[in-house]
Length: 141
Image 1 (cartoon, helix red, strand yellow):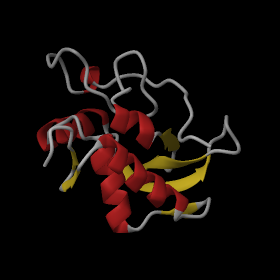
Image 2 (cartoon, rainbow, N blue to C red):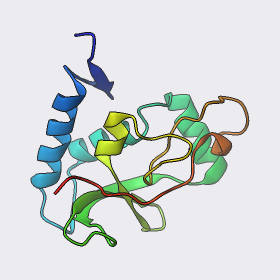
Image 3 (spheres, rainbow, N blue to C red):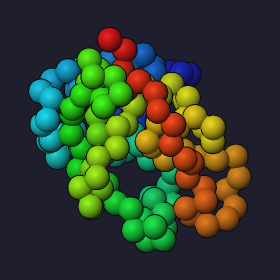
């Protein structure tokens, strides 16, 4: 692939723009309140964890008990005209997830939108390497 390609899970996109188009089309293909198909759910989970190895994800889940059980599309509670993905945990709690921030690399220690993000240090426990949450829009109108 090209110099600016991006790989998410087993899928490689020629550019971040192509990845954004793919996930925007996925978001648009679901009505509000609907859970994603198994293939699309796996793709969103791969995107959420793209900066981590499988071992790091497993360690985090084992240490914290947090597991993404499902993914659905619905309207953002703070931006009611904006549809976005929601990660659903084992307790059926929903957290908005921004594919745009995950792809563009805006996920960092100080700006994360309900998604795990790599911190500058790989030391410490699994849960200490996952950042806190901050609200932002899921997708452009």
